[in-house]
Length: 374
Image (cartoon, rainbow, N blue to C red; front, side):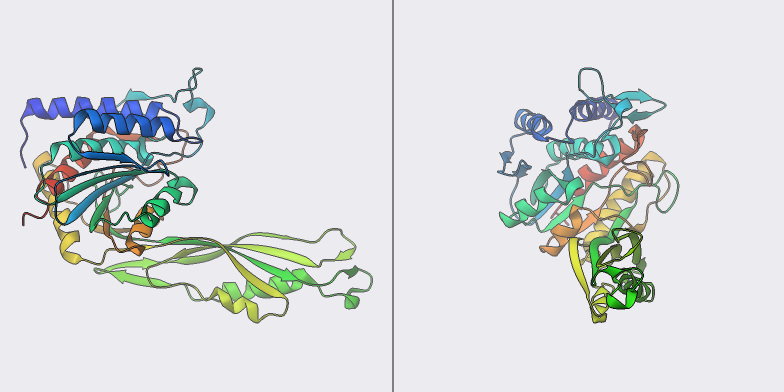
């Protein structure tokens, strides 16, 4: 992998300009304007087949054969007030080799890098670009696209994988945890607190359920030698109506981090009289199911790191759920490779390293350029 100094400088300038443009567009309540910017750029800069589906996702394709997708999302979480200009646009600032602003790390920087790599690569197979809506609110865009038939064979999802194995390294994540949010509801019957035996205390039943949850085994999985451990934790409890009334209802909120193929046995709480278990949200975990693909992406990453004089990346696992989980569930073989660092996303000081953004562009381009040619 080699690029002339002039080309590298030009590409970096394009990458910074495009990232700044996307980040400046608010997309926490309505992703339309940012989707418009992505769609128009792809139509102007590429000869690809560019579409905008009914959900607002932006998709582009070029080439034929086995498909590799570069995947991201252009929605963001609500900004801190310091991240919004008086005009309503988002603040974007460059200092100390980083871009600051809502969405720089999660994940418009990676979207911009993917757009440029999609434009610049000439793959032997089919290359796909996809930027989804609604990732931050449950993956509505990915779910809609999959329901409509979006099914690339392979995908590199540009969520964060930087600084996992070491400082200033962008690794290849071969698996990530999912998240299952559920509510355990205990039902009883009300009575005056002076005669507690006349009722059935829902809080007591809920406490029995909590004891069951605390004793559950934590799910674990192994992917290509990397261990991934889940977790189960009670995060909220709400019950009772007055100090002198035996409560007739108590709800317990449970956060469960799932791993591929494994769930905690939360259904065991329903063995307690009056207790029901309700799943509120289930974001699936991801496991790469093709070691050769994971190795090819890692090889591309290592070539880029080596050419830049950076430390060597590794295959790692990731704690956060992403759209890769839904794609993998639908049959797409996925890995994750992106610039965001642990603790960087969703903060009032969110930022991304420009060097790492450029590294991601180069890795996407190298991986795509060699696609289906080996």
